[in-house]
Length: 309
Image (cartoon, rainbow, N blue to C red; front, side):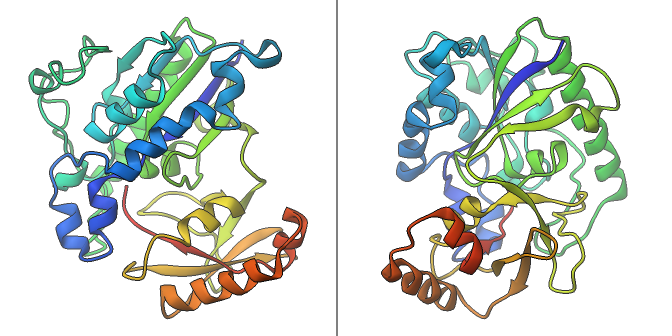
């Protein structure tokens, strides 16, 4: 029997903000915590249009029976803040930790986490769970073949772990790169998608989008090739994700213009010189007072900011 899995990316964290000023500074922050904005985003999960129906059992929608959470601080904070008061058990699982071996993707010992997060079950997490072979260096662009192989194995193990659990409705609190490799989809901070997870077949084919905040479409490079992320397979995303990422600030080191490719029904990602250029385009569209998402899909020019984790 299949399961319903709500995938949640963590809220804005310290390294996400630092990335505007310096990617090097951002990746050197050990186990970054949520910013005040990130904490507000996490609290807002209780009213997320997708997760809300399950949390409050609207229309007979089953309530989540467990939340599986990456043992990094930003995902632990997102889960404990976002699900506070709902009585949903929180279980840490190292399969869902972020993927590089830089400090910002490196956690701290379980012995240092249990006091900060007493509501989380860490019983299945080894004390030095965060020691891993990174798959990608975000400063040099180097891809580690061994790191990528181990990451693929970890995503397969994560899928099998979920399928082996007794719960039928599960929330996951994890990371951008994890989701790019696990389901091939871009997530903005605190974005939620509901997935169907089948118990049969190859692990990657078991995942199917059941509900998202807008249609999920493929992303393409300027020359029409499928977009990938740090060694992943092809990546998809929603237009709403592109819109959310367009407001991340003028110092974004990598900014892309995402526009609808009507012949492929996907988003074509092309480079643009600055955040300000994209922001001016979107401000102009806002003045027009677009009446519906259909109009946005026709003329949208949204900035898609790429950043690690």
